[in-house]
Length: 177
Length: 177
Image (cartoon, rainbow over all chains, first blue to last red; front, side):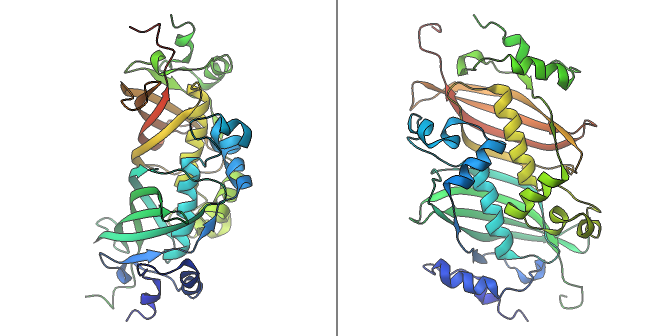
């Protein structure tokens, strides 16, 4: 009933390259395809100094995000990404991994934390775990998912954690009873 | 002891233009300048269709963020900004308003919500309220602030709410006893 779904579920130790191949083949995802405890691993994303500085100029113009030289004199001893840039990159990886039919509508985020810095040259991946599922009460064609997103760098250090609630499409109501 | 601080405190009904003038004249802000209940109003920021689509291409490539035509057929009946774009624009306004000495280091965010959509042509402002203050236990030169950021559009509709914790510099320890 859910062909190829196993391709999307991250195994501990699965490398990102293998996951990228799986992701390329992914079809759309509906609320009804998910169950609590499902885990998904994203492809990977390289963080460049240029992107980091560009984001900072637009949205978070502070010394440790803007210039390598100025950043060396700050508490971070070098350039670090804005937490909001990390959040945005996480969204990119999450959206491409889960690939929801007709998109995913964010309802809210809790416990957004940045336990380690993101620096130029880092390679990020996102692991998503489904922690709660319920049909929408107000919109019959939709379901509400609660998930945990964990963003890690190439050394396995956690750079961001968050809980999120989102609304996603249900399949037409003939396959589920 | 805190000259010109009153310039930064938003009065109910103060228009954004007046605030912008105040902001231009703003000096740096330290932990010790703040007290619980202080409120600050940002200058305003125009949301353009081009910026909205550009952000979506990079970070949140979904139909209702990417194309005016495709967005008309979605639940939003038109283009809307990614919630992460709204969060990033809020950061920009917040950083410029509070203008912390040696920057503000984000520790975490809770209860991030998007109760109304942001659409092209909207004009956003951010109101910041200080809700808790304490000296840092681990870093004597810093203080931890807890704040609420409320992002509203030109009609006064709330488009984003959040609570945040951040670390900011203290003044040299001779003026506070």
